[in-house]
Length: 294
Image (cartoon, rainbow, N blue to C red; front, side, top):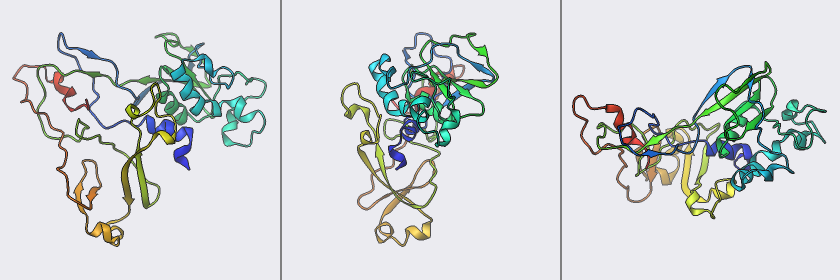
């Protein structure tokens, strides 16, 4: 099913818990924490591309990347390398991006739509951007450091998409008070904007990289081995036809839907700051990290 496809895994890996990722001005002396994993925004420079620095994705050259990057690319990029995918049979719609005579066995071109290219870049450590064709399912990943500021060249057929990586800072001595704004925190990870195409009952699985082998990440559906429960997608009247759910105790969730239990109901997690609001004149922005998952 879809959960087993490389494109779907890349999309799931790029889906971050909801949090306040703003990187406001920090207090003097505040310790810096490296960028949080994941990419949620992109900047696009139209009719431009990054010269050189394309990431190797072909079956014979993908191993020239670091071990961590190569593992991701073998699973999620190499199957979509244009030559690998389309040189024998070009019946797939993706092969509209294949250019015979241009794409050689070691080509770095991927036959993917722009949305899939961005999801793949988000899942690839060190990916610094994507050169995506404006009309064809064709793109190139760019390796870390290959696209310095001002280094793009004009090319009317391509747009360059650069990731905007959310950054985190350790909150210092003053935290911003307030009510639960629906962000993630130590007690719970909250995900928004999940849509189902049809009703039904679905098993929810989670990938915890700390439970995986050393240097391994969430590359395949088998890595999503933590069973979180079931999701029932239906109207209320249909849910009430399920005898188990009629007896269940349900609590509203921060971003819609209900969380239901057949046994004892645990206390609802609340993600609120514990410190008072800053005093008058303090830098309120210094407390935005208060709502971030630690």
